[in-house]
Image 1 (cartoon, rainbow, N blue to C red):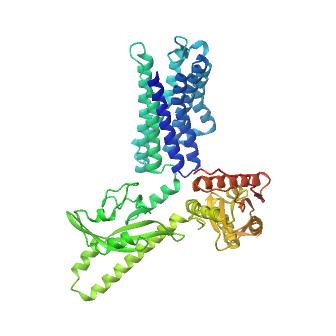
Image 2 (cartoon, rainbow, N blue to C red; image 1 turned 120 degrees about the horizontal axis):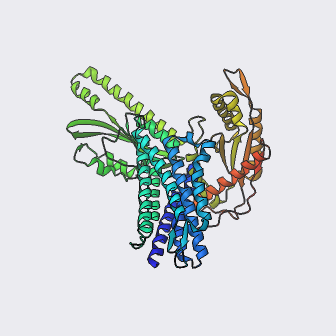
Image 3 (cartoon, rainbow, N blue to C red; image 1 turned 90 degrees about the vertical axis):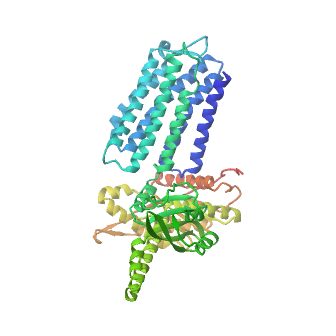
Length: 564
């Protein structure tokens, strides 16, 4: 029995480690929160199996048997719902259809919990560690298998459809593998430990192992294909359409992005470490790097370019441009671009002796280099700002605040965070349309920008919500600034439809001033920042709840304890 207990406990621990890894490394979005709930549900099955063997009371053993199977009934519904979202078949999730979709799982869970006359499960030798399954057990198995088969069917339809995007096919293939693994292990568990129970010894943890492996496939989909990050997917689609080969590195030379134009030139994967010296030293590359490599390695803040020559069947020439990504004076990575100049080089070589045309060719190269620099600048701007309003985006704000807040707490410099929401913005969209709604958002942000100081940071938090970080500002100043923002927006008239329509909106503000550092710690910047976000979000919610067009200030009694 000790081996069985240890086996399930190990699987619970592995699932918990995966959960902690996802929680620490993920930018928390609504989809991630759904995943965390889903992951906790997956952990319950092996946990219940472990608890069954730990309990001596038959009634407690029975409770955990029921809890495990009831949770499993709802777990397969989660798989099916995620499959519908991934394959674009959310139309099945309308209100009435959702109830029909959930009904078999609820009926199965009800059957498990009621266990009428022991027709689902009964004890053997006064214990549920060894148990006998009845007729209703097979009803529950058929329901669970039905959900898994429907998920697999939807994925197969997506894979065979000709209009399915290659990115989606890769995601669906990985998820198909995960559900198939779970189905095989669960059916093996039923076959070996139920059907063949009288002839074979118990094989522990088959379903638990299937859950773990399928969860790993789920996580690979999230990380490899950015399944939850819509903005990053859009950025990837943009750079994949460019003819330039683009490689984005972080400050540790870890690969963050590789576009399709670069794939034929080098087999690089996101997450790998990129070594420029090793790359240019490959046998099929002919180039002179004596000047370039020292600058690249010892002066990473400098822009540098050089020509790279490939010799694989035919000679190819590429201009390599290396540009640092600087945010608030801090280098956070590099952008490396490769432009195919083979044709250009051929023309230069052919007209080398024609002095009159040489000048023209050199001018063409300058124009190409200027265009390349513009593309790099656009990429850098795209990574930092919101495309609609021109404000900073949430990703940049989070990175900036993680460093800024540690400095504020250490030096005890007061600061404040505003979370701003445009009141009744949905009614603007409904009445005037989304184009006018975008104009209202931009006009409102222009009014707010005109009121902020030079050092204040304005970022789009999501939808019609915006966040303002104001450094070196005490509580009284922050409240006064919030009042000015509320007033300037309320009096601002946004002109639309060629100045034919004037729209005025109001804002609600959640205000979080920090000027008392008795209980403030920032040893773990992400955790501390998440706590501040939660506090200011609750303040905004209260302001809207109390009638909107108002300011609600957070009164902080204590914060997260020191964790280091």
